[in-house]
Structures are given as structure tokens and as C-alpha cells.
Length: 236
Image 1: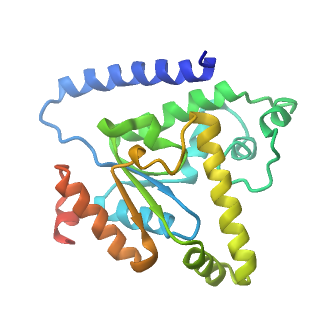
Image 2: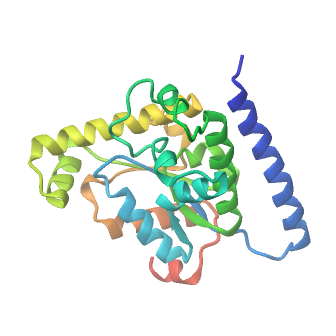
């Protein structure tokens, strides 16, 4: 039997989509906004690609903004919401239970509720959404879903150079962070982050520069029949 949080997600998505469809009927000539989700491995240049892609598409890049908006809507401290965010590297196996005993309680169901509403809200106006399982929330009808990965050797080298740490520490950080992100998706959505069917475009960034990855994504979006802004078309 599915948990209450899963049913809550489905109900929220249905309600929000109904509202979005009503608004679209009122403005039938408007072009749908560009919405791209980026799932990435640490060191794969995912965050950098997301920002450049957002600039090219002339939309907002939404990364930390998501947890800040969840905190604002839930009227919770950002640090508490961050403890539920995929970037945290020090959470313990039973971190949900640990958080529930805090004075400023924030339940899993509440986190689901506000996360879904924030992601759907971003999709109305367009944006490049980084992580948080946004590809699963929005699905293929409401976003172009991208997965960016890389070999642990290349990703660790990038992390080592960026953070000025030795290669062994970088490799451990890459492995640990990628495991946490995979656990996040498995725990919240019961999905495998590496399942290619959850994405429209997957790329190994080992052989490419950030700009080349952005160009490949834009080509894939164009070939998929999506309408791109002039700036994006002229960059190809």
C-alpha cells in the first residue's frame, strides 16, 4: 500500500495541473515556458551547465532557491529544510526520525507538500530546475529531463581542482555525494536515479566542455520539437 506522502504528491500534482490547464485555456496563444530538469553527478559540471543553460534559455536557474522557497512557504528555518535536502553529507541513516524530534518539527509529508508545490510553481513560468527529483514530479509532459554524469576519475579530478583537495578525498566526496543523491530519490520517490527512462537526454560529460554540453542539450530539445528562444537558436 502506498504511503500517505505518495498519495499527497499525486493529489497535489493533479490539483496544480488543473489550475495550470485553466490558465492556459485563457491564453491559448502563449508559448509554453522552457522547463528543464537537471539530474547530475558531483563533478559532472551539472550545476555549471544548468546555470549556462538557464542564461541561454532566458529563464531562472533554480537550485538553492528551491529549498529557500520551501522554507518560506512552510515558515520554517532554512537550515531545517536544508537538512532534508539532497546536498547534506552528514545525515545519518535514520535522519527523518531524528528531525521529527526537533522542536521546530517538519514532517516528511510537509516537505513533500511544499517541494511539489514549489517545483510546479517554477514550471509555470519556466526555469532550469536542479535536482530534487523534479524530473519525476513534472514528468515528460511538463519538462525536458536531463541527466548529466561522468566517470569517477574525471569527476574527482574536477572536484579536486575546484576545491583544492587531493584526489583520494575528491573521489570519496564524489562517491558519497552521488550515493546520497541516489538515496534521496529512492527514499522520496521509490525510483532509481540511474534509470534512463526517467530522462529525455542523458550525457557523459567526460569528453565535453560545459558549453558543448549546453549545446548538445539545446540540440536535443530542438530535435524533440520544443520551441527555443532566439538566443538559444542563435547559439547553435
